[in-house]
Image (cartoon, rainbow, N blue to C red; front, side, top):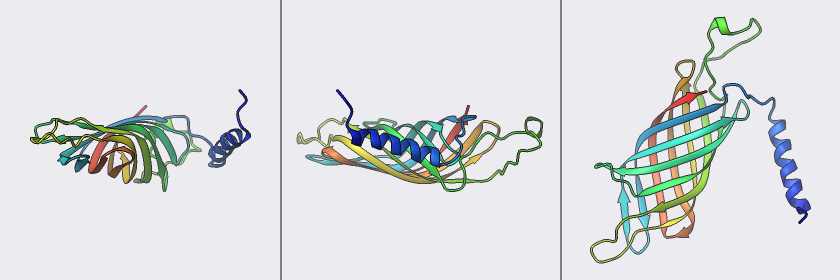
Length: 196
């Protein structure tokens, strides 16, 4: 089966866009982060229930450019007794408005032709993937369980503390756009990031 010309043209345009962004940054590019936040998740189907006030976010990201990172994410919400029934898993992209955080280098590890600016990295991002909730039916037998595809816009700031360790603060809004029932989550949290 031959690929359609539109598909090939789309792939070529994507590659051209990424190459037009500038020189790729392949060193110090992989990061792993985990964080906690406060927020609330609302699940609606036959009934409406909520879960919170704790949220959790895990990401693995690859830096493809000094301003662009792509990766995977897993988000959850928790009750105060640490039970959880809602999860979001998908892909994630971040665009840094000034520059993505990278490892801090000491003077001994830098050449004389290198300039490093240590600053806050402000970003906007978008995630999409699959969301689901798995709660028991309520007292009258109505279910709030929902599942479907979600989108998750977000914004925040990162700061590199040491050579590999950084911190991130971000606001995340998640909502299902296709599926059974409806799930929405808002989260304001912080995370610890490790750059390899």
